[in-house]
Image (tube, one colour):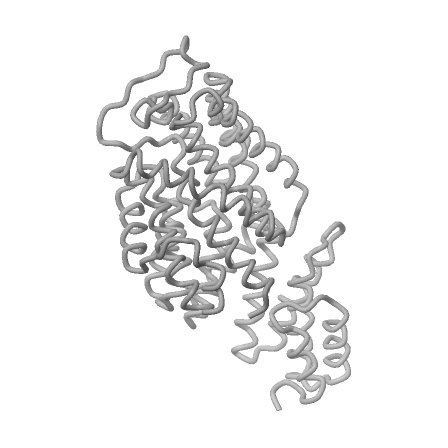
Amino acid sequence: MTRSAIHRWLSRLLIVLVVGTLAAVGTGSSSQAAPVVQPAEADTVAARAGDSVLNTAFVREHGAKGLELLYNMQFAEARRHFDKIDARYPNHPVGPFLNGLNVWWRILIDLPDTSHDDAFFRAMNETIDRCEEILDEDPDNFDATFFKGAALGFRGRLRSNRGDWFKATLDGKRAIGYVRDVAQQDPDNNDYVFGKGMYDYYAAIIPEEYPISKALMWMLPDGDRERGLRLIRQAANEGYYIQTEAIYFLAQIYYLYENDYSKAVGYTGELRKRHDDNPYFHNMHGRILARWGRWKQAKDVFSEVVDRHAAGQAGYNHHMAEVARYYLARERMIRRDFDGALQHLAALEGLTSREGNTDTKFKALGYLYQGMAYDGQGRRDLAVNRYRMVLRLDDYANTHDQAERYLDDPYGQ
């Protein structure tokens, strides 16, 4: 494992602790009735968890409606609810943070597109600035602690996605203390235990997956795999607004680390029921079915994604269609339907060749599978041409090794 890979995993470990704050905003799911902050108190931020604006009826109502709209790709409608919260609490970090979440989901459904990055970073930086102004006057302020940890974690998460591992690690280190403070102030809250569960799980499995990472993790508390899973399941079953994020990460965990595709599919199925218009969850459901070998079901899922993209449904953008076309081509290849595979691959090539697209992952994978399909048809000259095109692009998922292999030995022979 290279040093850069270790640094990458360390940064992910550090920021994963704060993922538990992703959807907890606007919840305050304590079982006790919370006081409602009146409009005259809008510029005041509560000091204790029980007095947090997250517990007010106003934030709970508009936060819930906004997040539900957000998960279903209704960004403008979601922003109207978040702007109401920001207007009610103009000096509070909740407003810019929620609007940052709105931008985050635009990024997540088309991660190669960096056009929204600046807006996202501005929102997180504004959140942090508001928190610091409050903490200068009141170092123990609950809301400022909560949102500063959340904003640092989100900022670090995007920096990690963009390969800025050093800054991502710094954000993660800073975030840890804030999120721990939040959990300690409200340890029985089913939303806030999510961050603890995430940390426990990943702190336990990363040294198992990458033993060399132990050299960089000695300063961090030990994890507990089983306790982590238990706490994440608790958040998924009993959390207030954190349920969607908890279910999502359970699906990822069982898909990527526990190798239990049945449970992973069960969780993505639950996400689909909750948010049928979310293309990210839609494609994720299909990918896990494909990994599990349930290709007929996966085909149905990805075909629906393609249909929704063709219909122009919100969120079903070109990148989501790229993912679906790639897997539909693979399904045809497994059946040795090379003509059918090439039809999907031609559509994939059209998507990846669009103006302004700088990501070449699916372009490389598409050319590789085109070469394999041409080899399957006995059209060797076209196959060689495609393998050489793969080698002119960046290497993704060992595409260069595979292209060189099939240049020496034709696919299927």
